[in-house]
Image (cartoon, rainbow, N blue to C red; front, side, top):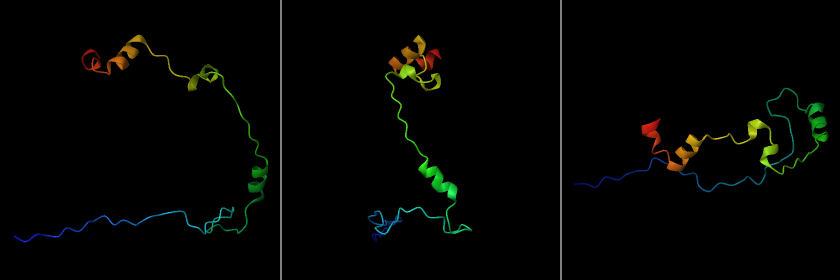
Length: 89
């Protein structure tokens, strides 16, 4: 019996990296109708102000970001791994 040769269908591209000629300058999109950036683009960049807020406790967060309160039944389900829930739920 002849041994058949298998050919991989996956074609690997090789090692990739960041191109060295990449410019990080802000330029308009190549397909835009105008070749300049709008003035509002630069004004928004200069008016940026960083604000840093510090929290001493998660209770200072708004209610939608706080941890939900768990009932005793939910705590028991978590502690049991959910195994009892299949028969009791």
